[in-house]
Length: 244
Image (cartoon, rainbow, N blue to C red; front, side, top):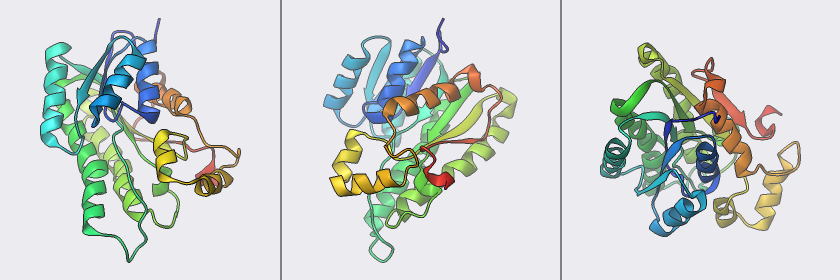
């Protein structure tokens, strides 16, 4: 018996990286999973890799029309939601003094505005007793030069989790934040050169980056009844980087 048997889960940004690893695990644990991604080719490949009990819906989490189309698909195919993992996000480095309006609007639009409306638009379909989790970042806990826009756009989630759990308490819907650190994904390889990757690894006490599967297991904990008494919390999975 799986930990998510019979559940319906929605994972935004689920076509790559940590969220894709989570989608695979959620399906293995018995859920039907809806995943989103902006690139159709990557989305199709993710659906192929997952193999069963998965629906791919192309869309951008910062586009409210795309979110409506996602939830229309969920309503038509399954009727309700038990788990929402708002994981779509991104960022780019820019030092204070060099930050552009476009950078601010892009990353707050996706990481903050997109996350808020991903959650809000899901509520009419949400089953009582469900679980909402949002992907944070340990950049919001550290002081990494060049990442203030990204850190700020992720830091809002801790406040939202506390407020929203209070607003949703009568429905027993839990709200938590999963905060990864440096994780070896294709996006990391795209953003950083080898020297930067080694520098990041030097900050991690165990000396290596995390693996997407290690974040997926933490997401499963927050999605399942294993975390039934965990609410409004931030689960930091960064190998101890921000603990030192």
